[in-house]
Image 1 (cartoon, rainbow, N blue to C red):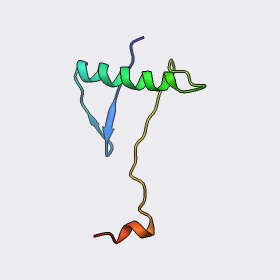
Image 2: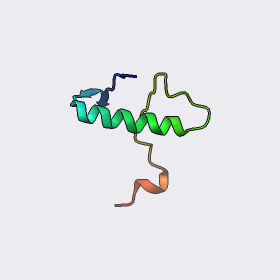
Image 3: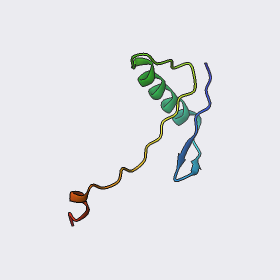
Amino acid sequence: MERKVSIKVNGKRVPTNKFVHQIIENIIVSIVDALHDTDANGTIEIKVEPRPLKKDEENTT
């Protein structure tokens, strides 16, 4: 199955070549396929965001 792969960093689309597209697609689909009760044939969305600092992590400089 051919898929559309897109990457955005801070809302801006990052262009990828065919090799990078295939690597990302194969890795993500393989991970999702290995998860229990998932269907890797549908749309897969992954979002990575910074987590807020905890109070004890704020003043570690």
